Figure 1 (cartoon, rainbow, N blue to C red):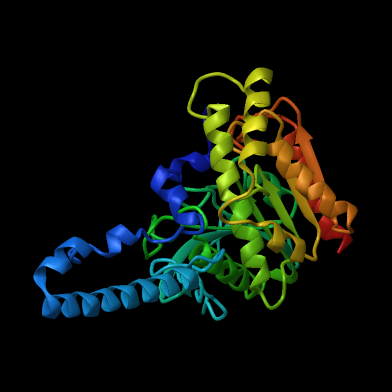
Figure 2: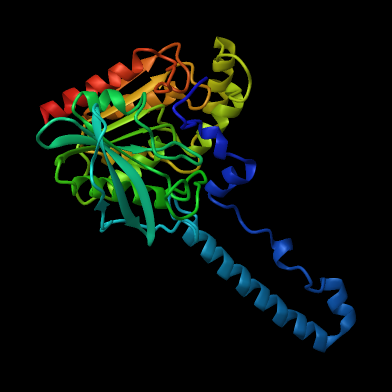
Length: 366
């Protein structure tokens, strides 16, 4: 399928090692921690002095083990981060700079640079050719090495309806500094970048700072709730396409069982099998649900009922429960569509129109 140059599949980042990283680690193997330590039989043969030395070595080994367990406990929480993805990552002062606007007839383009975690990111703000201050969306990428969007299928319909769009090169891609990319559950840096992008857009004189929202696809379903929870002023709305509301572990179970890498659509038999395995596996890894529950602004969630990358029905079920509890969520499932609802050739032709109309109506009502 032809896309807009932004592969939106979650599966690209998953390996068995990646999945293991996002699960709470189990106990460290004692045999591994005691390598080189004399066995009880050997200690008896070596005599008293060596036995005392062995006991001392044993105590040291156990102290090392306990220290390691403490470090594991400190680092095993959801979203706890790592050296490469520190939980402390934030972007509260992106110090955005804006280039001169280039008039392209249908719209104007502004080069934007902003700094997060000592990393300079670069993007383009697409501005409608209309007077006044405009509502805007900040695009949040899916997985993998993703450059900024061009003025194409995702951007043009919004700009033509008077809504500015900001898209930046993911860190480590294109003109953006840093290292790409994420591992499942490690979203602190990309969430900080998304927050920095929102603050940058709010600072532009032609943007209505009270009407800036997130728009993203696929892995953005995990990134956006985290990013929104860390903004002192939440975004005005969120529009997410193919965004999982399940845990990273459940998504991995689904993609394997549904045969994401296999040719052809998701059959009813394959879907039933994947659903059964999903139920048996249960949640594991990074869980976006507590963060989604904190969201206080309107949200749109679009899914394809035949998605082989994420469990769309399960995600929609989680969100419907939140909607019933009072969340201002709009949840739309296109029964026979797969992943890629906003591809150049969308898997549901009505999906892009549904999204643009919802954003337009939401900003007009705010």
